[in-house]
Length: 180
Length: 180
Image (tube, rainbow over the protein chains, first blue to last red):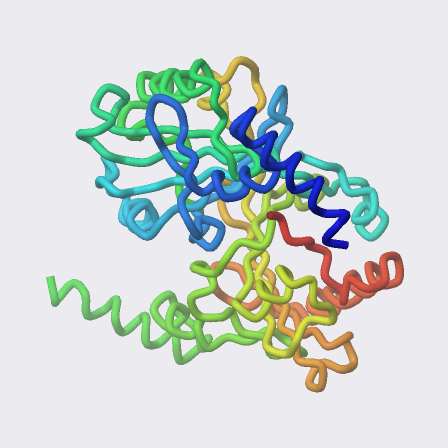
């Protein structure tokens, strides 16, 4: 088996040298990856964080989502503290909004939607000084654990959250309300 | 002020004696309350538990929901372990499935739904021996922190989960799949 593997390993190294990325390297680089412009990383252990709320988007997103927060963010939500203190991190996970024909057979009527394949994870980090130009928030979007490198997409985060603040002042640019 | 309050306090005590319940007493009794038949209680600190997945139900439910689990349940989900070990507890929180006209003004098209007022919390507790007659699961539904006293409702939990097991064997009567 090692004789079979060696050529593969050489190809892997060669492609890593040529393109700066390979399946093996990508995994270790994912943890290091930061979003363009704001340099936001996917926080370690975020999947274990506490739930803030849930939501569902139709249209192009067509997703169902959970919003989690680190302890600083969750405490601010629960206390109703705005603006959020530095160090607050909010993570929005989203999955395809999938009909569940299986559940619909159990329930009295077709009605059930569940989380399908993951789409992306968006991270908002509060640092009033570092991100002063964007309302104190740094943003990043991640797919499969890796930051989306599109700078236009990265800029669109603040553009959208800023619209919210104009429309509904006092949210500190945060869409989600805490669900008890 | 104390002169004004005294008659109120007397009425409160009197109503507590007469009906065994009052606004003040209800709060302290909520933590003690157990579901009919299975005697399931609302677990302390469940709102801090880790997220398993999210879902959305139309029809009579018209809700959006989050499914949380204690550490035993989450570990079993992540490891793909079925049946769930004793001590696994799954909590399903649900809120009204509310359109968000505010978000719709920010987004390019009307598309946004959020969690509204809480509806109820359903709790599933695994204990293969204690709940042998109902597939190893004990069930309870809670509104405003208090167990729903309706025995027919309590029995309907297993009836519905049993249908799932017939339709899709190997789920250990659990609808939710873990979302990564």
